[in-house]
Length: 134
Image (cartoon, one colour):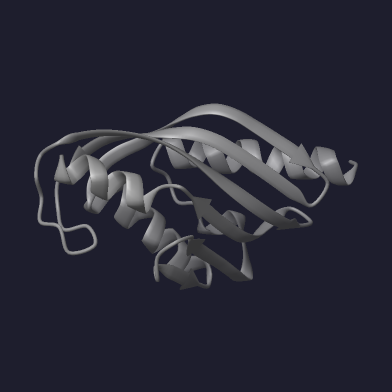
């Protein structure tokens, strides 16, 4: 399999598991990092990265990504999606509001072989807070 084919299979399997709320740590490199850009939210290591992803999708919000596009090019991938759900618990100091949210966002991934080495989430936190405060 080529590098691009390996990356595409990894990303498709990861996203299928994420949407199904299955474990995703198995797709991560041992030294994986996740950064929510524009905030101090970050995680290091497979369990911590999965924990932050679960916090966003299952704890602070009952939410899921609605995928718009996925681009894979060698050891990089980029995702465009909408974060859709309900605010059900504390998020960045904001207590649960029960509000419905829909935020377009993107994630850039660095891959190493068949593992995700880094995730950088863009344009998520600030728009979420704006919707919760409206």
